[in-house]
Length: 101
Image (cartoon, rainbow, N blue to C red; front, side, top):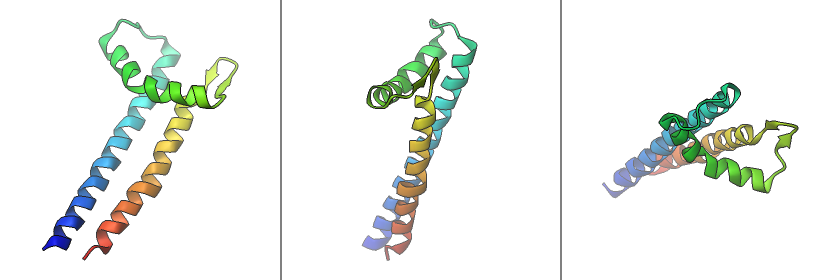
């Protein structure tokens, strides 16, 4: 009984983490696409996108030289980190959940 609960818990954590990482990746993609259009900075949707993504992207910009001219590569690096977490961490959690008996 206890192993079933542990397996279900780890599986649920892995699934929620996978969903959250996918959603955040798409938010970063939408923000990157919007940067080419130069949207209205007072639009509430644009402000929400920036407030959600700016902490991660500014952290990456401070740590790594990700600018080439006027092109900002921090969204690409953030997406690569998210993909790594999905392929390594989430996959490891799923494997752990299947091994719990």
